[in-house]
Image (tube, rainbow, N blue to C red):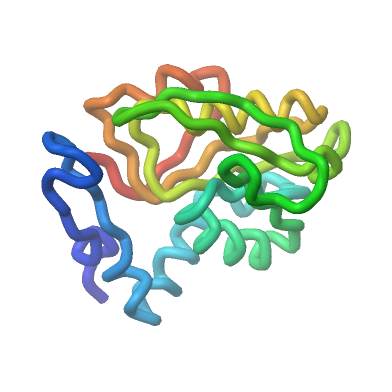
Length: 171
């Protein structure tokens, strides 16, 4: 099998000039690549006794749900404002091309639950840090932050350095 990296497409100047977006849709279009990626992500967390996998909107949902199933854990979506139907808590954050906020249901994580956070890309760390704050506000214990891709030159890992961080691909 070819490397997962072979399925990542660079899109220059998206979502704004100067950004090179790492597009995972070619990976998602190939069944064998999906399976390999899910297995590789599972391998870096399998022994951590996870209660909930938190996936970050929207690309964190793809492999987050697969990881939850493999780990026999629940899945919790974290979404942009006004997308979740129940009561939420919110956290603002900065990202490499602007600012935004994320929300989670108030009852999504119970005190003491062991949580794996998953997203497709770790860039500046603002998104991941906001999610870490949400999880801790609800009483969850962050076991690890998982990413398909880490953009090391943006130093996002520094913002979440108090948590274990694992990435399959680093650029």
